[in-house]
Image (cartoon, rainbow, N blue to C red; front, side):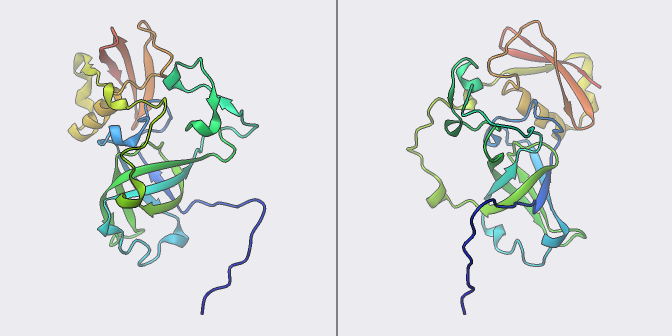
Length: 235
């Protein structure tokens, strides 16, 4: 017997089903799109009521998932109908629905990430290990859907003003052996993010020293001649 579905109107109350854990506790230096930094990893842990046997059954047959999540650090308040995308230099406005700005009527984001491992055996699980993520640490996850290539991939689609980030590939160097503090895996993750130039698209100051948190460290760097990023300190 089919379940009766009640018509619902008005506001929709969302609650997190899970949280993702990454090495980036702030927005700065996060990949602009996860697919350009495949070395960036994430671990999804589920809230207690969703730690159910079988809740991920069948997901192992897919290679990628679609995450629907919340911009957890955006301040509440009225949104602007137009925004200035960094891709356009920060001086041209487009409509909010022609952008992926976090300043939205409903602060929801979408990410496609690769499944690295599914752990349903360990206590407190299930656990979902992903790569190619572009989310801050402890971002709330509202839904997880399998990525279906035949339905979700449109190679002929136009990308508008959002030019591919793959065109950015800066050299990354470390001063005074400061990279010795990181494991090889974490160094590769950091380099993959820095090589894509994490600075705001319209703020390129060759004299400025930038800093952002990564793991439990603070990373300080500068950019030389728009070609090379030099990590000055990891502390």
